[in-house]
Structures are given as structure tokens and as C-alpha cells.
Image 1: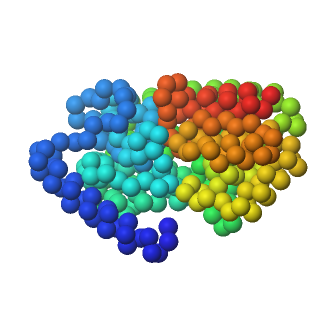
Image 2: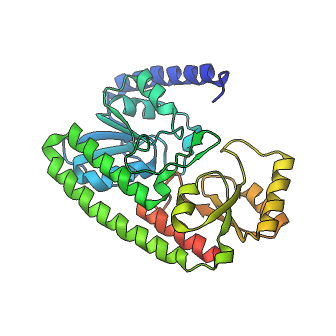
Image 3: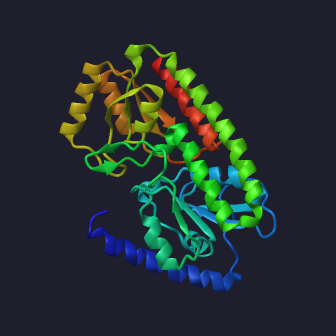
Length: 311
């Protein structure tokens, strides 16, 4: 974010805090409800806030009924450019534990938590993650680690450890949830590899809407030729679009992959000019409707749609 944009954003955040405080007084400090259905939490469940629905689902899978989880960014929302509503700011202020991704994906979280007076610790799941092999381009570490399921397993390890620290009385339940979820993710990873290993070698070059797929592509044997936009909210120049069209043609790219939360029109225009197809309903930063309403669901959805488009 530019230096000029920061003061305006901070003023919006401060306004949110004042409105949230007024709402809290009017409502008797009622907590904002979960944004999508999960296991019914037990009375006294650990109150957890995450930045995205993906992380919220992971926390629920580990914590089960012992956690009450709210995602700040709603389903279908855009994490990169998120601005909080009063209810979301108030929910963050009452969290006993907060999970973000970090690495620039949701860098608004730290300031927002400070502004609303969050007491709970903030865990940035992707930062300094033991065992992770980071992808760095132009001096920036790509934050989308979770799209390689092996990295999602590392997230789950950190989630379990954080829940157990915050709520040691339920540590055995968190360990059991962790172990069961880890086993499912290992099976999911093997399934994804099998599905994409069957693709012809010449069909493995792709274009993505934004730079969300490098970990996925490295893990599952695809090559990214380019991206439609450098980052969400940054439209490419005419020259950049033409270079991408030329690259698609010269590399024999079969498909451009866009995501459900973004307008697909630019991707469709580029694909039409370059002679490629468009898949515009992948999920990378957010959950969707069933069957893409869990992390496991979006991986199966994305792998199936990518494999179908590249056969």
C-alpha cells in the first residue's frame, strides 16, 4: 500500500472502531456470529478470529466444538483489498486467538488488531514456517503456501500448537483433531498428484489471474507462463496484455485460470485473442458454496477443473 493511502485507511479504521464501540453498547456487547456454519461450539468455547474463510475452516477442523471461529473476510471476499465493517472490528477486539496468513496477504490485520485493542495473540501461519520452501520473486515472498497441500499440513501443525497453548485444558482434543485432519490432507495431496500426473507434458503450461498458483504449480507439475494482473486491483497496461497474449501463443498455453471472486472479463478477452480457454471459477483465497465450502473441497474443485481443462 502506498504511503499516501495509509492515512486514509487509518481514518477509516478509526471510524470503524468508534462505530463498533457504539454498536457494542447498544447491543450489550453481543458477539458477532460465525460467518458460515461449522460444528456447534460448546459453551465457553475458545473464541478465534481468522482473516480468511480458508483459515477459519482449518481451525474448525482441528478445534471442532471447542472453538468458535469467525472469518473477518467473508466467503467470496477479497483478502488483498479488504476493509473491515464495524461488526468485524468488534469481533476482532474480543478474540482470544487470532490467525492470519502473513507475508503481505493480509497485512492490514496487525494495525487493525492494535487499533481495536485485541488482547489475544496473533499467529501468522505462513511466516517462519518450519519445513516450508518459500518462493521469492522480485524480493517478495509469495504468500499462497496453502495451495500446496503439504504446506497446508504445516499450517495445521501450527494451528494445533497455538490452540493447545491458548486452551491447554482441551489440548488432547486439539491433538486428536489435528491427527485426523492431517491424515485426510495427506490423502488429498496424494490424490491431487495422481490427478495432475496424468496430464500430457505439453499441456502443463498455464496462465493464472494473479500470482496465487506458484506453490500449487511447483507441487503438482505445472508451469506458469504469466499472470493476467500483477496483483488484485492493478490493471495491466496495453503493452503488458499484448506481451501476455504473445507468450500464451508461443508457449502453447491451453487455459487461463481465474478465480471466482474476480471479474473474468479481462481473462476472457486475453484468451479470445490468444486462442486459449478460460476457467473462471477456481478458489484460491476464499471458500465458496458447496462442494467448495471447505479447504479440502476447494482443492478437489480446483484440481478437477484444472485437470479437465488441460487434458
